[in-house]
Length: 177
Image 1 (cartoon, rainbow, N blue to C red):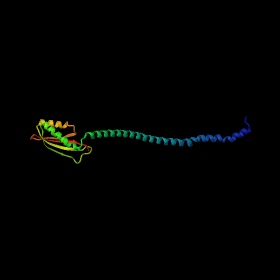
Image 2: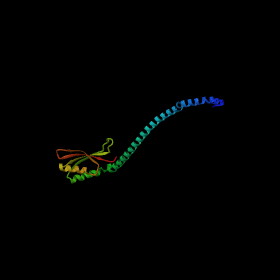
Image 3: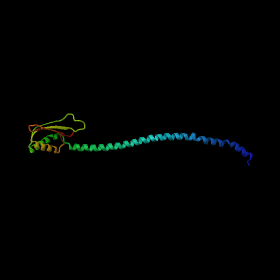
Image 4: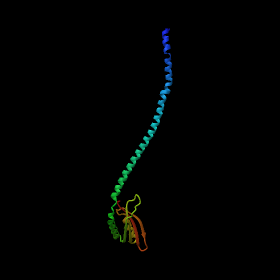
């Protein structure tokens, strides 16, 4: 059995387990609830951060794609620039027209050329050339095929056949900007 002193000590200490029990009972609401709120806030923050990171990675991929396209375009522009002749090539081109005309029995009556002031966006500068020719139909066809096969950037824009065995031939000659 217990002595009266031990019973007295137990009575003194009796409120302590009740207090501890109350603390343990209410501790989750005071200690864990703020942590749960903090966890929810952190989760939302993480979600928005994750979305931002995904968007940034997507943009980085697009940027790489655009850089690669720009590099290819730059290479193509350099290649085109090397291929396009300067404006000073025009007399040589007209000499080639004269040589072809002489070989194919085509008579060049007049050659008129001009430099358009306004070139539509994205197109390289050009020289508009108009040839008035006298020839048979077969000679004219051969002349047109020969002009198209010249190693120059020529674009045949118009061919007009007249009744008196004359033809008008319009050509655009692309040149370096």
